[in-house]
Length: 366
Image (cartoon, rainbow, N blue to C red):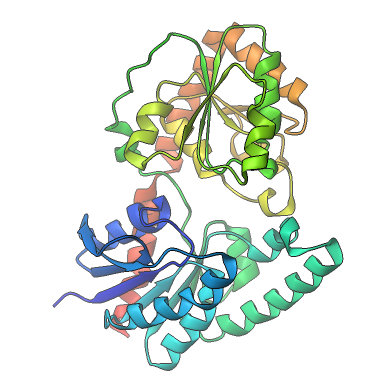
């Protein structure tokens, strides 16, 4: 009889790449009976994963204080042995499940404490510092209850819990990218692409300004959701080279990515990104795309040879690097080929899936 396991998220979309496509599908393929409690419009089984729907959030407070109750009761109904949750607001749910005798895993995709420092909507710097300290105390207390804590970089694992921490890096599913066919294009213009959250802190405004400075004919493709309508207007107004595609399903992202000439990852050097590994950079590499990245020292070391680096707050610097790549296609191609070779040798999800399965087998046997 297969072991029942349940993943829970109140904040992520139903087919999130890490949660659904990587973790849940890998577990289902390994023979676990997998449920995913997540925001969705219906109950269904996809790729062997049983989706248990949660209602849409009606704002942050509803999501944090009402939706978590739905998440707890609906996850409990799956009668699973192992519960794996993905959002900090679900720590209380995790504690309750542990008290009820379940095995519980906290999957922290980012260093949330550091992230709080950059969330302007939480108030001024002093207020954010207080909230950060309170959150860290709560997080440390909650982790005492959990069987394991997963995160995506060695630094975050060490910060959260050296004893309970397990490193499961967010590397790409190379077979999924390899099997994606390049999408047909309407024009032959060189294309610069950015895929991900479209927010100020991710350097989107500077990218939009930079492409307008480039003299060569080209197109900027943006894939993702805007942090606000006002920021969208700020970035797109009076711009002629931008093609905004909105949020695109994963199976359509890679065919679009393969049409591009250059991949962009120019996030601001805020604390939360200084030791991060942006998944999109690995996906660009798997599509043989040269990358223009922020000159964050950790990135310069990790992506040496696969990218060229810029000041993410300088549209002029970004424009100059785009121009150089467009004017030196052979050099840009070599960078893309080096990245492709590197990602295949070092950065595949397959090895991370093995780590995840080892953890589950250990918890299941206890």
